[in-house]
Image 1: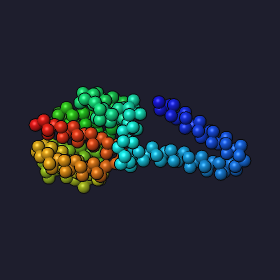
Image 2 (image 1 turned 90 degrees about the horizontal axis):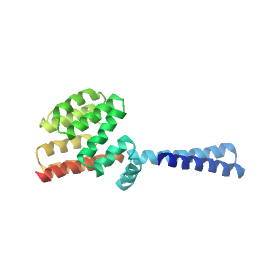
Image 3 (image 1 turned 45 degrees about the vertical axis):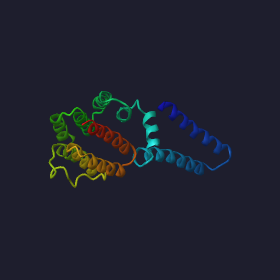
Image 4 (image 1 turned 90 degrees about the vertical axis):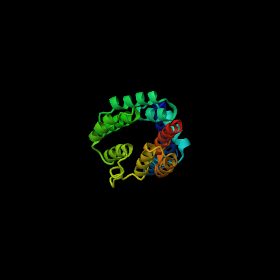
Length: 210
C-alpha cells in the first residue's frame, strides 16, 4: 500500500511537471510549483503525526500503516488484546537497534506485564531525555513515591499529567485518574494523543474491574 501511494505521488509530480512544461511555463517557476506541492504533502504527513487533534484522521493513518512496527503497536493498543499488543511491541524491540527506542519499548512491555523489576532495568538503560525521566517518574508513581514522580525534565506537556494519572491509578482513585488522564490527552497531539487515549482507556477498564 505504501509503495502504491508513493508511486501515485511520484506520477502526479511527473504529470504536473509535464503539464507545466507543455504550457510553456518557465523552468524556475515550474520547479517552484512542484516544490510547493511536495512541501504540502510532507507538511500534511508531519501534521497528522505530530500536531493533529483529529483522532479520526490519525486512526485512518494508523490503520493504513499497521504493517510498520510502530504503527502496528499503536493499532494493537486501539484494537488488539494485551497479548497482541505485547507481540507488536516485541517486533519493535527486535526491529530497532537504537538503544533509546529498544529500551523504551522494553520498559513499556514490562509495564504491561506488570513486571516492575524489568521496567526499572529498562528505564535505567533508556539514556535519552525526556524518555528516561518519564520512565523513572512513571515507576515512582506506580510505587506511590510522590516526591520522585515529579521532575522538571518532563519537558513534553503531556508527561507530568500522565504520571499523575498513573499515581491516581495506583491509588485506585478513578475520579482523579480521569481528571489527570484527560489533562494529559488535552496536552498531546498526533499519534502521541492517539496512544494516550487508548492506553488510558485500558487503565480505566482495570479500575472498573476492581
